[in-house]
Length: 414
Image (tube, rainbow, N blue to C red; front, side, top):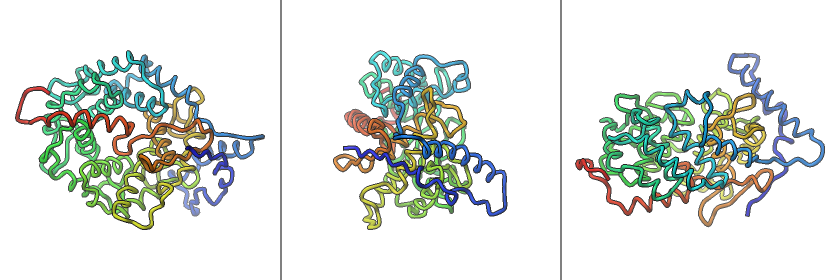
């Protein structure tokens, strides 16, 4: 049973003490932070001084219309994302799943057929038909296909060649290139671990050294950078921790230090998350940062940490929901980074994913739901490791577990 909270945090806590104190040392960064706080304060104060009862509403129909339209037609402004077309499929399909908006069979089949054209003959998926295979769109394509979850969708994935593609990117130190001759960072390790575990193509040697390499990316701040020695970043931290969860090697990290770092990334005034120290709030980190909390919580719980809450994740779930609902919804559908920014499918996906994380605590029979605003704001849950529906994860894993793990030395297709 969902609990609806209508007493808004922002109406009672938007006071000067929560805003930036620059200690008489203004910088370009502090000036930008003050601009964001001012734009957010306008929205919070409008709610605070509104006449009559006020209830936060997730504009589900508008968002669903925006998303469905994106699967059928994109304007010329999306030409710059020509190498990200599987990502567009994933962002839209997953967002519709969170909104509990089923895809028509014909549309789902059309997505499968398009993604099949993005699959390289030698394995992996490119950013569009005929483009070079790359781990990022490979992750997006596999997630989109598993979200659709039909026999047609699963059969698009050539598992044998996908496994060979992953082996071709593996480096001696355990890291992975993003593509042939491409860059190395924590994203690639996560994308490889995610698709390999979902499709049952993991072998004992595919991820030799990978967990240790990721652990070396943990920065002194506590979060994880893109490569060893790089500043901690929310997206990289999620990728690193989620990959270690898949590889069952989370113990290699300093978890308390990581928890401290991510907890301080939730902005005191806005309620949303920033991606790095001294950066601005951004709606996409509603997932990249808040999504770390279930992973940390479950790991620390398994270790018997007595300080863990039994009722909520270790961040202000109410504040995050309010930031997304008040500051990240476009009046014409779709979600965005922060007030003044434009909507896009990326921020729609990760704002909704973060909203889902903030609404759901626990899992399975122990799942608890806390909804700020209208009870109709409740979204479907998302899996904190893969960011697709938990039921979709279970179905895909069960389906591919019935198939043999491909042998990389065998050149035949799956």
